[in-house]
Image 1 (cartoon, rainbow, N blue to C red):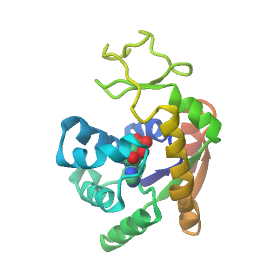
Image 2: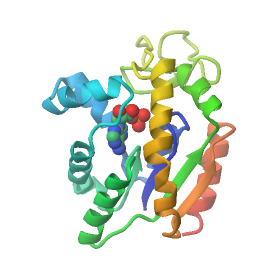
Image 3: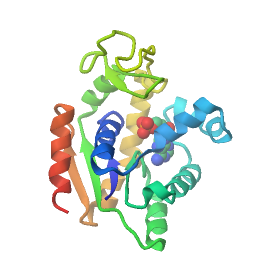
Length: 215
Ligand code: AMP
């Protein structure tokens, strides 16, 4: 199964993609996470993209498309993948469409997870992440049982540098300007499904599973 998860920042794409990865046994490919790993490791790619990410801006299309197109042809992607956070612009969607067509393959579903902007700001501003194992928490909705430390591995939780209110607003504006047009772009493929992102993690996952059941 090959899936694209669309939706604004903080709608729960990453959380749902991790659940889907376990369920479908195909890799979860998060462009944001690959960029953050490169920043942490101080690679040349990390050095190039750091500034954009910290300002809440999109990384340029050529850098992003090259990274994803290499990743999609690794062996673990043979039976599918879940793309989380890519494509985010029309040129990215066009580029990936062309690459897949040349490889004689295509995406099965494009799932757009949707939430009102105010709810997105509330979710992101309260989000905390574990730099040790990657687990995510929320100060109100999903607090760690060990306060500021990860339940799973005990490492001190952090707030992502792009999860401060000013940067969240910038990311939301970018979403509406650059990514939301993808809904029209994919609208006539017959593969786009809108998923209501409200409610708990399991509610949203059930809605996604209902859509995948169509296949
Ligand atoms: P995310 O973890 O998906 O919220 O992504 C974090 C940040 O990584 C975004 O705000 C962008 O700066 C960058 N990023 C992730 N995916 C893309 C993409 N497809 N195109 C451009 N920039 C991206």
